[in-house]
Image (cartoon, rainbow, N blue to C red):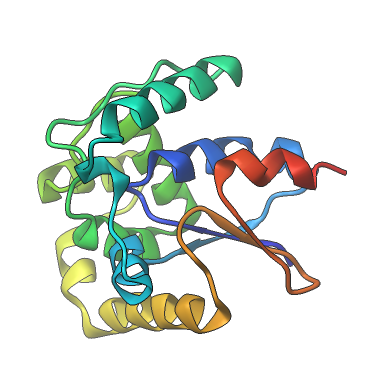
Length: 179
């Protein structure tokens, strides 16, 4: 099965998740990981905190428009600390992740705010977010998934892992995988 590694703070992951099924011809399994931990392991950080920020944001806005997605609305203080959001993604699965991406990048919701995460969870029919993101099994599952992604060689998010073992990094490479 094809797997798409993502972090909810990544606008490139948002673009990839929104387009992947149409481009690939089948839905990939979405795998939440902590981009920050992958960056730390690889010795780099987010471009969202560099001089490239404005240019990359403009590029993301162009891609969203090109692909027929809602205009990007940047969350306040982006990029947020996504630890709680990513634990929520482990707990809430793909319905939560898709709703959270749209809340963040189409509506400007701050995924660093647990009250926002609770509202998103309730919107997809989930209750108990605060307890879930504090639970040892959810914490361990995110840590295990991130460690496994690092061991596999995932360079960042979004990355598509194909059944043949190839890794394809970046939303800009997604179209290369069209059947």
